[in-house]
Length: 327
Image (cartoon, rainbow, N blue to C red; front, side):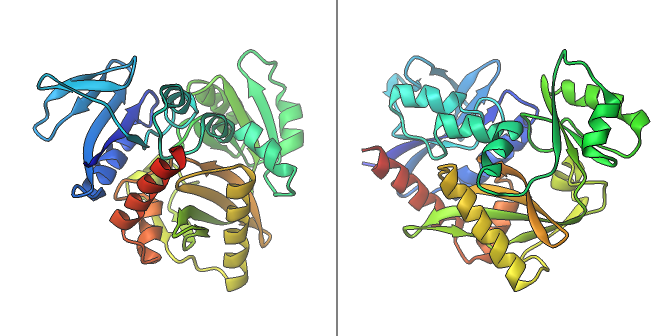
């Protein structure tokens, strides 16, 4: 009997539309001969299973089940591709763990930790991983611009602490623009992070568990037409994503080994993507995405292709490993 897989997509954050694209990509590339696959739209207003004909069926939250044609369906595994809240911050993971339904990504604690840029940086610094200088703020804190800029300098980046797809982020070049940038980030999250500018080549590294090994995928170099790798650069074609990256073999090996180290030290699972700036030749960690984009425009699919790893083969192994580890 085929295992029933729910591809959870959508979410409650500004990233929900990107997640729906990622979910469609996953759905199209899952092996329908091996799995009975369902689209699960997890949205603020409704949790729904949507079939091939667009028919909608409510998900019963008490056990994550659905009734279709008078038949109750429960799921053997959830393929979690929700970017942001509640799929990347640990909430969905905790819910599914209570229900004893395996899911393809990190556990709830690791998800919550990595989703919080400030806390994740603090942990990784203990392993001598270089990061930008940062200044955290919470909504309601006194904002001392002189003190902030004395620590991080100009230019700097102002970021929502718990967000993705570059929502709530600004590059600040002058002191006069700092207050507006802080307000912009607070519209996305009540915690923000102000970071020093790191000049250098930006690279992204995917890490997966495949054929029994934790491996780093080919490195992608980000060349953006904009001030930084913002939403338009990521999703509207205003950047070049070059795989493999035009960096030295030594730098490639260094960022790949560092990405695997982060994967292991944080206890990550499934597929993840780490971001670095090669500042003065040395990789500086920017962030880790535990539910990275899987739309046709996303980086991980590019890296899987460059690594000659068929999407369907990898997704099949990911689900089978998730099921096996849950037993």
